[in-house]
Every structure is written in C-alpha cells, then in structure tokens.
Length: 310
Image (cartoon, rainbow, N blue to C red):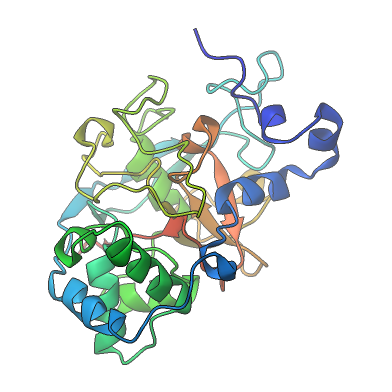
C-alpha cells in the first residue's frame, strides 16, 4: 500500500496554498531545493583547495555509453482525476496527454557526468570553479575528511545549463532532448520509474535526504545497480536531477511533433528531470517534469550527455 503522505499537498503547508500555486512553478520549486551552502553557511575556502580540485580532476573517468534504439515510446501521462496524486497518475498538467513519440537512435551516458570530469573540463577550458563548488569541496575535505579520489566519482553539481551544454560539446556530444531522456528512463512501455513499477526505496535511488548545511548526500555515479533503467542507465531517478536540452514548455505536450520533438523555441526555464537526493518520491517518476533558470547553480542539479547514432 502506498503511503498516503506522499502527495503534493504535503510539500506545502495547507491545501489552499497548493491549489493557488501554478503547477509549473510547483514542479520547479520542488526540483531546486534552494541550497544554502553558498549563502554564508560555510566560510570561503583557503587557496590550498585548488590543489585538491586539480587532484580530483586527475581521477576523472569518462562514462560508458548505452545505445538506445530508434523507435516509438509512450511519453507523458494520461490525465486521471479519479486517483489524484498517485504514482500512476499525472503529477501536474504539464505532462499530459500521453502520446506515442518516435525518437531516432542515440547513445546516452550510462552514468551522470562526474565531479572529476567536470573539474577536468573547467581546467582544460581555463574556466573558473564556482565559489559554491570550491566551498563544498573544501568543506568535504576539511570537515568530513573525504579524500580527493573518493570525490572524483561523485556526480557533478553546481553546474549551470550553459556549462553542461559546453561540457557535452567539448566531448563531441550534447545534452539530451527531453524525449530522449524520458525514453532512456521509461523504455517503450511507459514505466513509472526507471526500475519499473515498484515504489522508490533506499535500495533503488538516493532521495529524501537532508543535511543542516545543505551538504549533498549523493552516491557515486556507478552505484545503485538495482535502480537502473531497462537500458541499464544509472541514476535516472534521484541522486542528482539532470539538465535537458529543451526549454520548459508547460503546454508543449499536446502540440509537440510526433517525431524527435525539440522542445519549445524559447522560454524562461530549461528542463530538469529525474529528481535529486533531496526530492520527494513523486519527483522521481520518469514522467515528472521540472525546470530551472539556465544560470542556476544548485546542489541538486547535474547532467549527462548523449550522442546521435551514426
């Protein structure tokens, strides 16, 4: 039996507030989590952190890629008002109607881009490591005594959409379109979660975590094998939510093309998918959609890349 307290109303204090909030912004709010590590809760790191950052980058390992075959799949969720807010029903009005969408074949990273890979990219392209990430690395090393090598396979975080896009391009890849991401997570049979229909548990995904200083409670990108998708892609639910290529369109599904939908031509938010280490279980659904401003740096958002099939 599903726990009754996992409902969108429980995310806010009071049913009336929930119904006054547009569902688009509700999804965006829940994805972000509003981390506070960069807001004065942790002191600026000393210069020695740069040595650790370089060392973490030296342990970078690229992700294997998984081939996703061309073909159609069921994207989105049909509206069901008889069983509101269950895992089987739509989360909000941005994910219906369910439609059969064709996606060309592509390759997707089996793992989320790691912290080691991201830092190596910043160094190779002579980019500055954000203060948020510098502060986090120093805190993890100096307070929690996590060695550099152990941080390298963490998922990359505090990454803006532009940086994620540029990283993928630097690798000869790109960010996944929203339809590509959802197919990799759901397969052709509209699975509720990447692993199937079973409710999320601590053995399947990293979610529902909390730390007083907003320290990310993540797992290495190659962990939680039981939570992988039917295509053997890891952490498509939980751990770190992931940037997609598309602009977020709250009314896009009814009018999107049936083949390789590219997303809206413009918008304010970029799509974020999959939920994170902070998320409630409903945000781990493979059809649940969220978004964030492209310039957002969050302890809850990372990314992975895709590459078109030859």
